[in-house]
Amino acid sequence: MKILVVGSGGREHAIAWKLAQDSAQPQLFCAPGNAGTALVGSNLALSVTDIDGLTDWCKQEQPDLVVIGPEAPLCAGLTDALEAIDIPVFGPNKAAAELEGSKEFAKEIMDAAGVPTAAFASFTDVEEACAYVKERGAPIVIKADGLAAGKGVTVAESIEQAEAAIREALEENVFGEAGARVVIEDFLTGEEASILALIDGEEIVLLASSQDHKRIYEKDEGPNTGGMGAYSPASIVNEAVREKVIKEIYKPTLAELKRRGITYKGVLYAGLMIEHDQPSVVEFNCRFGDPETQAVLARWDGDMLPALQAVAAGTLHEDLVRWKPEPSACVVMVAGGYPGAYEKGHPIGNIEKAGEVIDTVVFQAGTAIKDDYVVTAGGRVLGITSLGEDLEDALSKAYIAVETISYQGAFYRNDIGHRELRRMKNGS
Ligand code: AMP
Ligand code: GLY
Image (cartoon, rainbow, N blue to C red; front, side):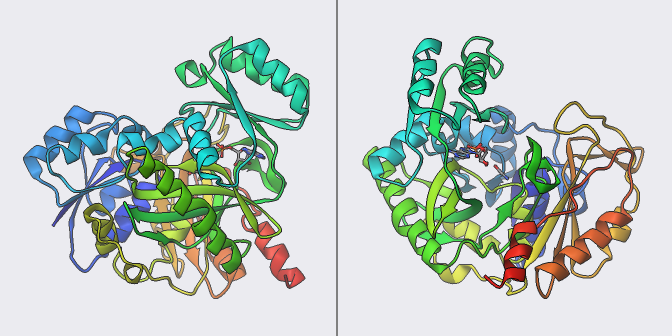
């Protein structure tokens, strides 16, 4: 059994780590991987968007499954290229990945399907966009239409800030082609949470809920990042919300895609805003979330491979997905300066020792091997993930491990899980 995981982040280390424990004992490859994936498989020197290189490798090696982590290769059509040579793939094709690749497309689908989401309009003209913002008022949200590595969204507190964001995208081309069109959305209030669902074209199986922490500083201050930590489950996603998520979000979205001749296979991530048990969609991603995946997969009970293969084969069943009752927490350690310019190449000490903390795994993200030593190689460096009897216990283990690790400029948030802890304290 041969499996290729495409990607190089903490999410891909978590996926590869989970697959490595599978009872089928697969031989794992990661393209291009990181120092963490090298511990559980072989890294290949192929970039995630090298569609030809990846396809050639698959033609040669005939893997039993390819699991695609990031959005860029999905939106570039890697699934389509591999399915054309009969390689089983976990991940949506190019047409389905447009749910993440174009925010306008995602909003149009939701609009047509009656999915709860913020009212919106999209523009390529600066003056028309500015007039719309004046009409709607602030706060208002300006989004680059295309893929902008998580940086294309401005939650504008004032009309002036909204106009500046519109000009940045449409006039100054800060996001290149991705910002040639902007989607302008009403501001939603509530609490955010992430839900992921496996979908095999028909069947929908929700995974455990989680909550990300997008801002760089404690108390959710400072600029947005790729994610500074997560925990699972997030109790804000209660049974009533889960039911609505299936009935009001996933089912109508998939039906509308189908009406347009698009079949969704893979994992569909819904970023939710929840208020009074009513979820609205903030964004769709066509992939596993990072760092949500680290927190969620730590709780996956038993083999994961049969579920991923069933998604690819169109034979998904809810019995293939089981959860450990223990909650999990993932604390992300980043490079000094992140999400702005940051340094690379600093040696990381005590990764192994940190992994010896009970119920704890150190998922590596922006790491590389240099002269037999693990060094920093990206903005988000590590995702330390622990299980616990309760969230407090999971967090205390994760932070013990975090404090064991050292590298120059290391930074992390000390308040991961703060909303849930407050909720637990208040008994609600
Ligand atoms: P996105 O990349 O679309 O998830 O947006 C990034 C972040 O901006 C989200 O996680 C939210 O915190 C915030 N955001 C996006 N859209 C809205 C909205 N309509 N209302 C309030 N906040 C939003
Ligand atoms: N954690 C947010 C994302 O994966 O998009």
